[in-house]
Length: 463
Image (cartoon, rainbow, N blue to C red; front, top):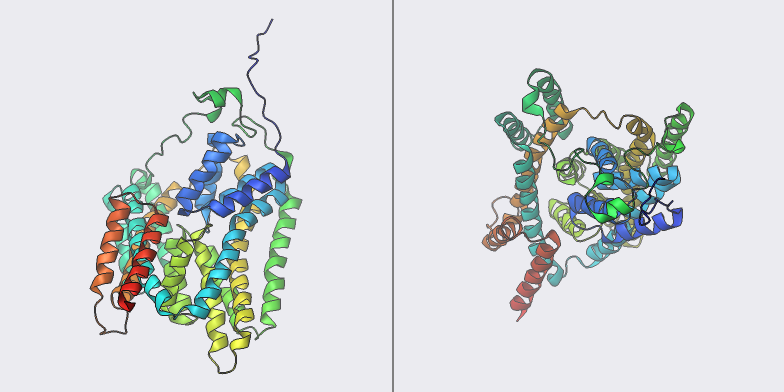
């Protein structure tokens, strides 16, 4: 006679409605950047709800980290797709960014209309200094985790020099790093092997030591067969690629009808499609490329407005790359208000530009997951490409350091070249950096305190 544990609970199917409700909740509280968002998902999906095992979650995360684009949003898309097919992936990824999109449209409108008020100017003065400190923190922490030998440190320094001193294009930096990692992985693999991550693959969550794991195995565990909808099928892949082609061609044709192929919306669509395909290493890594194009080349917005947009992005949920929504909005607003008498059309054009930028930035992320997911499920035990990925990550450290220099220059010298040095901004940058690195403050706390400092500064000035 076999004795079964009466307390063991078998995994139960999760309804599409229940999953959708969770993805919406996640989209509204997903503060803290990709690390915080992944931690939130892990806590709910793996530990509390038991939708995935630890290994399966990490396998999906590894794939999302290989791809360009926001890894947390792509991870949510992957999990939604694994559980409920293509509709599940679209809903999970879409709801992850929808609250942030709506909030940024509202905040961008407020900024564009009232951004020159003394009170808002003072608040954003403090927020710019806080954002600079946040970028410094990102470079420092990523560097500590990844630059574990002299070769990787050299790649980071060369990437920084290439962007800062020689003004090399961002895609060239990433391509050179990937090539160096591929060659190095073949000739000196020990130099390009990423440090082991705690808990990666050594122990299945299903066999974990806690009581919950023993009582309720995950719905998609290590040994759970791949669902039929997640298996590779040539016809399904062809249909997804065809839908992706339509998703690019039709909106591009529509926006080209407003201003032509070289008009504002069509140019934004093409530029931010390139941004989407080159955004390896997270938002901080691709923002220098966005700044090169949107600020310096096309002059859709100023450097000061770009930093203000990052400050807004830091205060809203969702992936930080959503700052491109603000960049698109301000690009449309600035273009509409450049000529006298065109203020009435500014908001519709600004919203159209923001939606265009958001669509073309995030569409590739959905395609990567829906098209590549079955191949990833078929190769759960074969994760490679560590050499190129390690080298790209090292280069990203230099790229983020370049972004810190770019922001610091505009914060500390707010006027044109030769303007006065802002010592108060330097003190605020130093204090925020110490709070983040030494005091372990959260990004949201630093942003909140900085906003209060800016508010107090204006109140004292007006007293």
